[in-house]
Figure 1 (cartoon, one colour):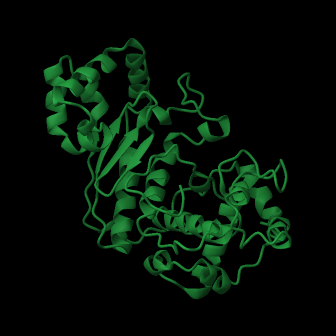
Figure 2 (figure 1 turned 30 degrees about the horizontal axis):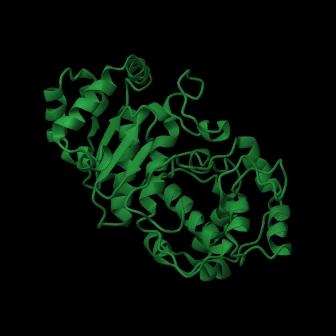
Figure 3 (figure 1 turned 180 degrees about the vertical axis):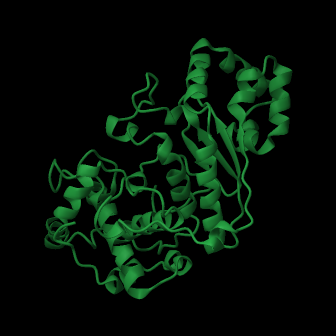
Length: 336
């Protein structure tokens, strides 16, 4: 994901883990004002209906009953007719390997109530901070590892096959360090991170590494504010050991950025070393986790919010990364 926000957020999402220690180990509290928001969520388990369908007419009926899903997810407009899409879906859902995949999803996600509850609470929190937020329709589906997550203003589709347990026989074709982050506890944080982009204002002319760092920092800060009871490891994506070591070496990490004058770097190849998806940040050390620029950005944004006492809506609306950095008073910690 980049600073720009598109209509869709197709996530082979590159989440990252957080810190189960240090300044982010805060008491979990959800206020009654949030919990009393008038939000009701019903997750539509479409994979059940689609695998129960037996004919072209059955699929045509499902497409007519779920027009947003058919248009945005299945891209019905690319087909010459509704029946042509229905015929293709019939063939896909009669495939034996897809049937086995569906059976695995049925076992792993037979009870989706906890995820649904967490997502409803998240929507209540977003509605509390951003009253204009409208709850989208939410569907689950078995995509055949074609799409993990789609989030638009009106629609969310969760490809449950991507979120089978990491040790499961069926796995998406992703590097292991990424695939490990596709698990049930990551579903709601991924969705909240995607939604955050619509509120995350940026300066389009600022192409510095600092701007990218602050963008991601705001993303993670937003997600933690909306999901205060979710462990940070499901928001930013390192192992607990990597989290601890990052805090222990924060001063060294920050020194690397300062001594190499990286904050105002605009070369995209250099920026990618610290922001892009990778198993480690090679420019610092093969033992340093990847995406350390994002991790530092979260620390900077947290300090800015704490020191300036900025409410979440105004924080997300602030496009000036330099201002956020300057007024954060950020200083590296010497340990957790």
